Amino acid sequence: MVSNVLLLRAPTQDGSSPDKYEACFASAGYQAVSIPVLETVLVNLSDLNQIVKKGPLQKGLGGVIVTSARACEAWRVVVEQLVTDEGQSLDTDWTSAPFYAVGEATAAALADISSIPASHHLSPRDIRGGSTTGTSEKLAQFILADIGHDTKTTLLYLTGDKNRDTLPNMLEDGGIDLENLQVYGTTGSSRFERDLRDALEGLPTDNPRWWIVYFAPSAAEFVTPILKRYYRLPELDVEGNINAQDVHLAAIGPTTLTFLRDSLRLVVDVTAPKPTPEALVGAIGGAS
Image (cartoon, rainbow, N blue to C red):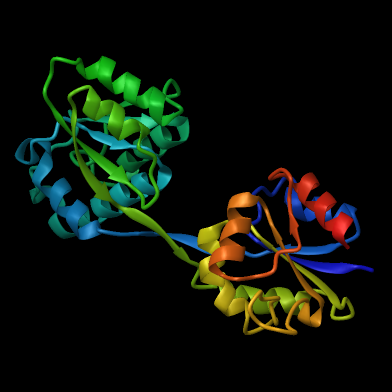
């Protein structure tokens, strides 16, 4: 029996090849669609605006650490605001401040900020790391070697809402102080319910069997109340509701399974043995 499969994840953004999960399900005879559940938004831009406006000397900063394209986007947005509001009257100068970047993509995004007209004094010019610092650990090692263990300095660290402790711990152990500023965060997609309705309209209505695949606890917490408006999800604490309307749930891994079962009290039929398209399709196929 053919099943519809709802994948609670963003599809791969690559025009040259199909999404791996959707393609893998299609090859096994399923009708699958991916729907983005989360989106990233910029936050605390007014705080960053004041830092950029005052400049590194007034703020006592010896440089900036940037570990993602989103952090670069935050700096770019603030620069555009300041150029529009202040123009050339702003005498702040960031051109000599080192910007430490994780990976080539982040370094390239920083360099591109200088393309904003009249932004020379606010744009990153001294970009360090990049291709040689593709991980947080490598960047921390690079910064420590670049600054030196005997030099006391404070670096502005632009972060998101989910950050590993590796880089800040290594730098603080090396005597470098950090001024942390969260400039982006993850939240539920404002388009999810609209995208879900569009997806339901595009899937065959004669397929009575549904699989819904969860990929992360954070996404599950946001999306489950919305899904309950369209499906009767199998719940542990609701008698007679298991597999209502032939809806089955799958988890991409044990962490997601535990959250679905223990926190959301949902019945999960399948957990992928590995977080790969092939393993997920195989697990669902074995339970179908």
